[in-house]
Length: 269
Length: 300
Image (cartoon, rainbow over all chains, first blue to last red; front, top):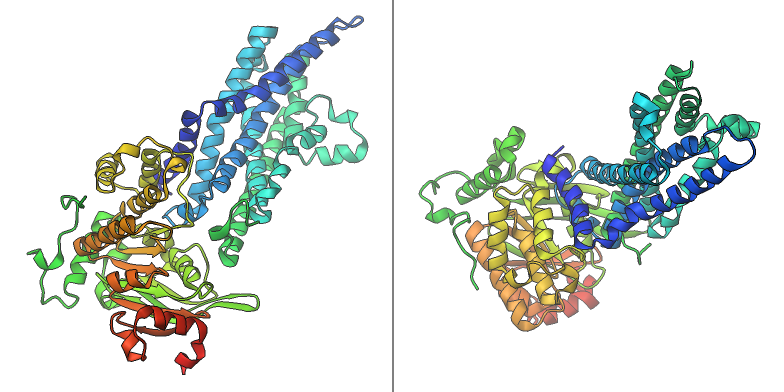
């Protein structure tokens, strides 16, 4: 792998942000709206009846971390789409750039946007609702790693689907986080789900993260099954990353055979 | 406007280090220089014993075929290009010119046949070989939302150009792009865009340059400037050029040899200035029209 070529992919995206600052808004705006909306809902729920449960503590933590994972997924997808929209594949793939370097460059871009989004939303939650994400403690690090790996896998999967089906398949990328959030138990325990949904939830790495976060925040200490949860979350995320990376490479090779890379643009497919 | 010579590979014959009695002559010097300047030294397998393997050619195509379901876009073609040679790839629309170029660029997988550059097969060494190849085509857009300078910077990183800032400065001057350096590519005129494409195409000093209709839709003045640029580049570096165009006067003016492609097959090849007479035609355009309309007559 060439650091120079990976840097080229990253810098290309960086130039887009510096060239048009309104692009920066896309990183923050929806996350900020989510924080405000869920923060206010949580605050209202906290005033109902004899509520003693810290709604803000649990829900805002979930919103920030889910937003982080979503940004990683959409960061990869958006960086990929920029190359689709600018019909740039022929120039990129005719250069010494390898598919591994290209994907690594996309991932680096998503890390930058994902972490920036995370810091902004965490700061906003602190400033407006007095919420401190660091309350989760040192476990925040492995939780974020699992979400990052899974977000990466989802981003690569969606990009592969667009690569296979054409730019018109872009819509696939937007609802995926919303659909997954139903099964991942982001806002409620997995036990709330119907039995069949709960089985599916166990195949989704974030479900282990959010179950653990709820337990940590409710009791102030790590649950007994934390090792199992972290292990399952990590292994599943890595498995999905491996599978989606292989899927992306397979689609790339297929496109090499059928000529789609040279012709890939919004109008052609 | 003239290309500066300071960062260029000197003419092989003018260079005292080149032995004219070397088995591969000037070609050896060119290829050694290109290896050294473009990172091939990092890949010893590409640096040694190239001369006996390449037989002095930069590009060798053997039995290249591309089949799309029922359509054979390229049908078992073979040719080679020598250092310093400009070869015109001619043919009507759909003849297989762009398909051939895409296969040489490594963005389209051949159904059959082999592409060798510097004695190494593209299939095995695509990334390394791509360091010494580049291209410009009307349909291959540079990212429109990046400025000229940003585009050159990104592609300079992709091709791992040493002294990138210096190279960029030189290219901006040579291709008269200084005024537009901070203009987004999407706002450039066709002529400016073509110059940007060419600046990108020569920035890694490729030993093989593929130009797919580089002057299409340009006015005669800019077309002539671009042809001059390419001729100067070839004279300076002894690079090999594969050039497609529908402008037969341009082909006559610039190419040393032409290959006529029709229905994916090479029907004719030869000197563009003598080939028409050899086939009873007055000029290349008449020959082209004949090939395009009646390929079978010429084939036999």
